[in-house]
Image (tube, rainbow, N blue to C red; front, side, top):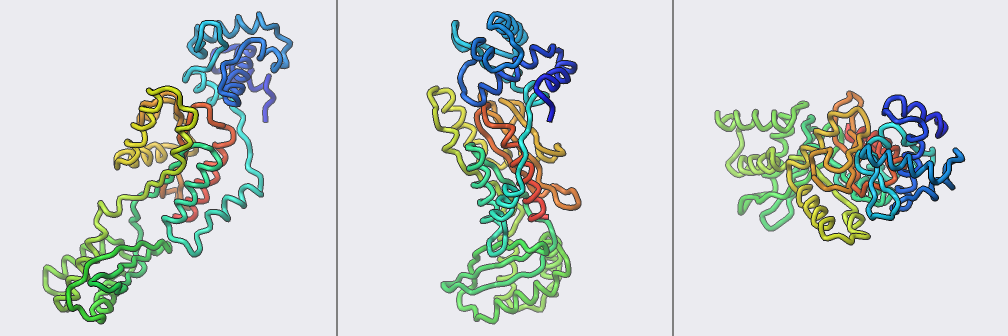
Length: 356
């Protein structure tokens, strides 16, 4: 890890700031992330190892304000970083933490999928991220398009049956369907045997195409009741029904310490947007265009226009480097980036292995 003066020197060479200005900006942002309070020159003079006087620091802060990197919330108050200043900080001055082996083991064991459904595991991942970040967490898994291993119909009584779909990757999905009145139990077995005989590594879409072709050509050799069960079982997994999974946890973390009506309104709009399908697709697109963790400050993501908010998102990729989901957190701009980024990075890799 680079020392503070050396990191500031290297960053200054690429940002246009000199080493002293970069060091003061970094210290001010770190103090803001810790406290959320405006930072004054006297506070910085005690924190900085440069031996600079408060007057000198005030002059540098004035230059940083003129450059659009700092602003003063009140006439006589200290300074806060603007979104532009935060962007410069996370791009070049932020020092990331590291997860210990114990922390990695804790995350991996928490997400252990044995004995749990995929949705339960993703929910656990979302709750884990929310707890670690004290922000709202997002876990996204796109619709499954892999091969199907097995299909089962289980009678529930009352003219209902449970359709169990097992993917070649071990993922299990369940749906409840209505069954024909007076249907004997053997019909469910007949329908399952018919579908399983035609799987042979096919995806759900490929299986549906073959069954539809056989039904159109009257080649199924199924009776009327079994044909209805097969059709209902496949129809319950249409493209819309398997559009993907978006799990959000920790929304209440965004509502703590809310004092401005506009801020509350923007957060409510954010929640409404996240419930829509296009938000999930946009999140997946943002993750897919990234090789690792990405940080979006304010409206940079295009997903929402809430100022004072940041989103950190990472893709979950399988061994073939194909995206199988995404995870992230949304919180105030003063979230602990150095802590959250390695947590998201490692959790995304664990989920990628699980879903891959």
